[in-house]
Length: 211
Image 1 (cartoon, helix red, strand yellow):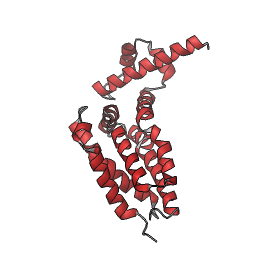
Image 2 (cartoon, rainbow, N blue to C red):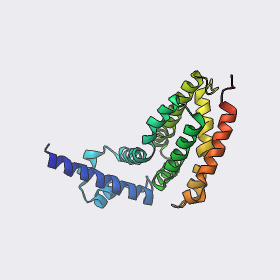
Image 3 (spheres, rainbow, N blue to C red):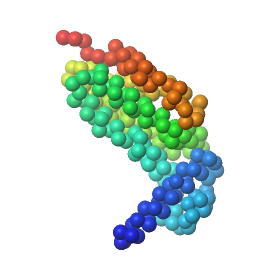
Image 4 (cartoon, rainbow, N blue to C red):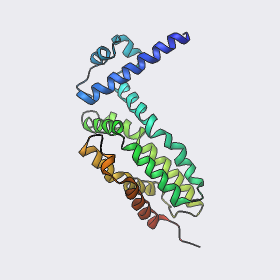
């Protein structure tokens, strides 16, 4: 395939993703057909299926695209946390940036969509959970395990520590975003204050005793 053809293919794929995102968010997963996606993207149905095998694959690609631009960039920072020389400062900075990322409206809208379809499409909801929350929890658990080994945290069960940390930082805020809706959710939350309090509570429970 020539460079020009590859460019056309990439543009068509981007158009399909954009059309699918708009339709899924506007009409729901069950209320959207691949025919509608093709018409909105101004491509043939055959072209849609060339890029995405079925509707579930299209939705997961849309989710992956959103996560790639918001949550995925934090993987390296979470891993680097294991080697921190200033645990409280680095944990606070990471948590604040991460919370702002997951509260971005495109991420919240997709999470709301997946939750709305969970009863009808439980497999889809499980796949989303594995791609997003579970992956991040595992990354935090790995770092907390290393920090336990270094004597900076007392976290003999790092997965549990990661779950506690995630709830303290994200829990209440993501609920507020999901149920209040709208692009101004971040404006209604004092992220710095919320994160500072969450990190303080986490370290009160998990910081290794001095000496």
